[in-house]
Picture 1 (cartoon, rainbow over the protein chains, first blue to last red):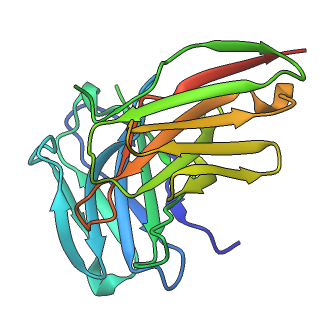
Picture 2: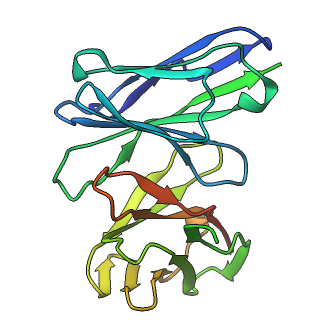
Length: 114
Length: 112
């Protein structure tokens, strides 16, 4: 399967700890997105990369959140000093620029902060 | 006003009926529109995209777009219990980031 891959799929952490999620996009997809989804809501945009450049970051995104995409391949999303409100599903998605921008999602990483 | 609005439902239809899901958006410059299906506990799965005014059919699914009214809909014909899921409307904004803005989703229940 060459879809978007995310890991870990589930993470339980204590409040105040740091967590990191990894996303491997579909090969040859140069755009990569991170979204967050809580129960009963649609996915909320967090940030977006085109190749290795982080081109947009949601104004709602706390300074505790940081994302990287070294060499324009895989990406990591780190949450520092986690809070209970960070509990959500973190979705990674990728697309190829000028392909109609169809975005494909990974299976998501569930975070529970206790 | 939310950028993309959907009725959260639940929308309940009997098996075999037509389910009609609606979505409105606020950015008049939006050019691309998508419907995703999301089963409970799973990630969104793309089922339809539409870019031009009118209807686009794919199997039992028909997407309808009216840019003048800023309205997108999804019709599911011959609804099956396996269609029970949350349907997310997503709109590509007029800025060229490729960022999709999602509605909150409509929960569809198809009753046998």
